[in-house]
Image (tube, rainbow, N blue to C red; front, side, top):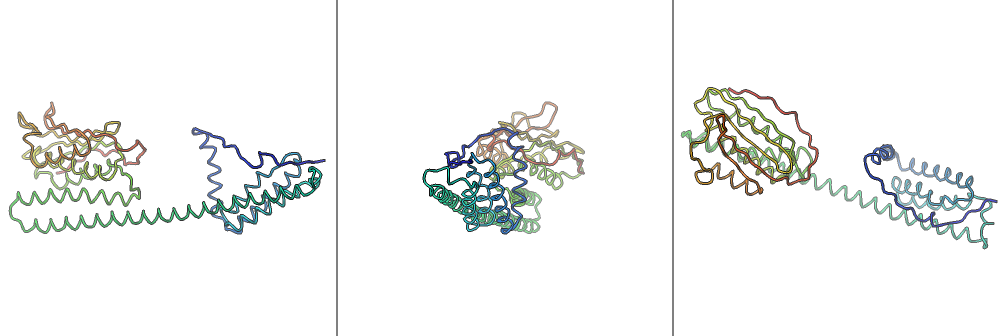
Length: 368
């Protein structure tokens, strides 16, 4: 005679913890199966759940001495998640009925003949509660996903508007500069436009990537260096640019500050290091780690003897020093032993280390 009793194992599942990449690899087929399930219709999900109930009931009949009531949760969860609460309740009742009739001799396993029907009713209630809670979780997840998408779209729109406004300001500065006849005044407007361009590109890169928490500063640094070399290389100077940038993820505020710092250092090198020279080399480096490091160095004339950046700095270097303190960093400006100037900015890692996709390091480029 086949007998069956409800035990604690039918009502509780002991969680098992796994760790390491082996566990993640073992989950890969499950993820693929879930992706396929997400594409099926509600009717197909319900039919699949009914088939699973029939299969489990057959195993329930074959095993006899062991109750498989807990396994009916699989079709209940499947129907609820992919077909809705009503379908989950239907599969729950069907599962309880299948458990009840899975063994023809079930009624003989209990002292009271109504006990199996009571247990089946309790199972139906438990399955119904699981379906209700799971459907509520599914609804909350869908609502949360919708809100996240709306917020993401709003953030993208904000960054897009900021970028457009900065470009308008840049255009106004260009129009105003065209009315000036003094070359020094025009240079001031050009420097302001370069700063604004740097901030506008950061906002554009941020909303284009879709990740509003951080961005890869290496790509921005490379693009900005190439743009400034094209537009600010002194006439008659053949300048080689070498950019060596590791991927470094920073938040938007830090990226804007670093962009302005790099902009000032590059402009100073282009304006003071290569004036009157037929050729030169400008190197830009960015290295990540516990203490990130950004370096702009040239092989130009170098700093005058006795130069002290803290006392004799112009507006550009004052901005560099002030903004470096803003990101809790340290600035070091000195002459290169072989000639030229080296400006190094040390700043802490403000974000956890992560893999950032970046373009291959660019080779030295020449600009006439």
